[in-house]
Length: 212
Image 1 (cartoon, rainbow, N blue to C red):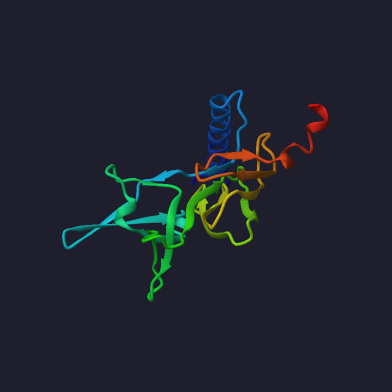
Image 2 (cartoon, rainbow, N blue to C red):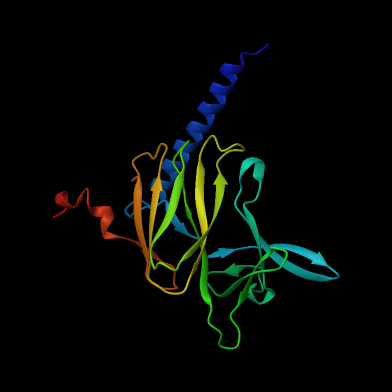
């Protein structure tokens, strides 16, 4: 009978090599640019449920233990374009129904809405990540999690659906695990609804003396 420890070491070695290869590939792709583990997601293809000949759209957020979803949001059909994609940010409302379902719909008839968009913070190998908002104070994060393996042994990345009334938004993301030279902390500012993140000055604190 095969030695179980050797089998698991082999599996661990395979994933480690794959992860290092992926990290190096990413570095080559962004050579000459500043690479961030923090990412803003600007578009998603929602899932479709058909009932009585009509299409109803929803987005499953997260991929936890054995593929379990963190939560689901239903999406108003007016937010889905002809190609079947939802683009962020959405200026609208996040509604919770009497049965507890979450629904995203556009703001209507001049009503006050919120900016809604997802972000993710990719963890290190066998590590984790965490996202927090520094400002504005009324920003809400609906957090979801993406496991890098069925049980999360290879890492658990924290992500969030951001709901905010205004820009700019300042985030702090922290990382653990094997980061292969990437920083353990990132401070990111999103200035406007174009959702282009920029690195905040805090990221330069440990190197600026060598850059001046």
